[in-house]
Length: 71
Image (tube, rainbow, N blue to C red; front, top):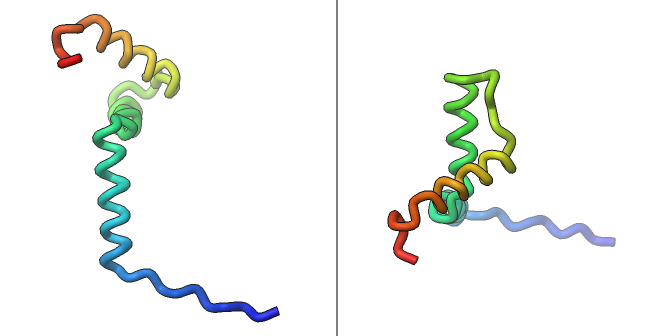
């Protein structure tokens, strides 16, 4: 059995992939929980919400302000 070497990925391609991942997480809102955790652990360590609770509150807030969105 012959083992083939894995080709190296160019730094530009890695940078582009990291940027694309960051962009998609920001647009989709997936990074909101990560930002919340940083804030909550620094300011309110005893009251950190689980991801499910966080998303539920986020959806409730969106539903409370239907005029704040386009659709």
